[in-house]
Length: 312
Image (cartoon, rainbow, N blue to C red; front, top):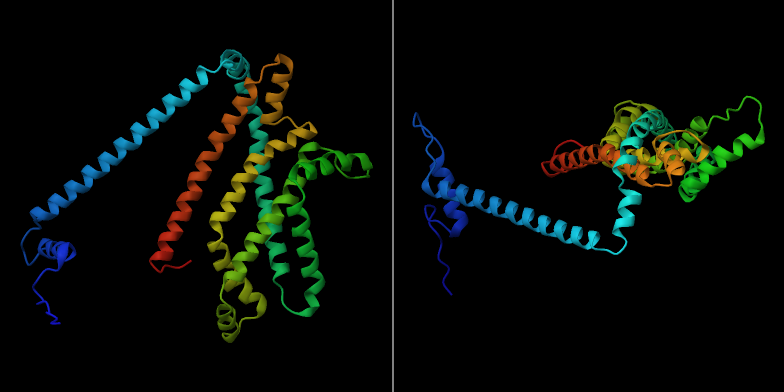
């Protein structure tokens, strides 16, 4: 069998032709850049294919929406459902009250978010401490995360919001907002601690060894070398936990705190119409979508950096 060696100037398939066209498009000397006909054709084909894909996606979405609409509105119970869940009069009445209650949810999100990050970081560091002397601290941190990750949030809220006032302890608050925020912090700090711990353990041991060889103590190596890398790597899952926390702030209403959910519940209980719940749900969705898209953008950006060999 004879093997024929290609000459350097010859093209080898479509890839070679594309490469040759790109080389031909490069400016040389004082000549102005003039794209070749083949390159122009390729760009035209890409634009046409993108337009076709957009049109197909839009058409399929429209058809799916029409089919769902017809199925729903032709259901036997649709008139009663529309009156009970999608009443414009009750929606207009509930919207200002829901927005007023949402301010409490936003404040809870801000305060609890900061507390969760701080407590979660402390627990994660405690779980990663080395040496037998720190075993009791590691065991307590592990027990904390296991317990609160296994305990349903709604039960935790009931225990803290309803159980703590029943103890009648001197100097302990009975404010349902503070107690509800405490329960949220206890639960979410366990999840965030595991996220931080995963980030800390993902840092290669050579990083810590290199820091120690430069004269840094274990504490300095953890603070200046390990933790910055661990936090950067875990930003997307941390943002996901923040999105979940934003939604779960509505659960503090079980203790009587008047947030967006409780405001909707008051109107629904008075009118026996469930439209206020739909309004509250849509408000939370409108608040969550930008945070979710931001999380997706951060994740995609970090994936591109990882693919390009950038710093993580």
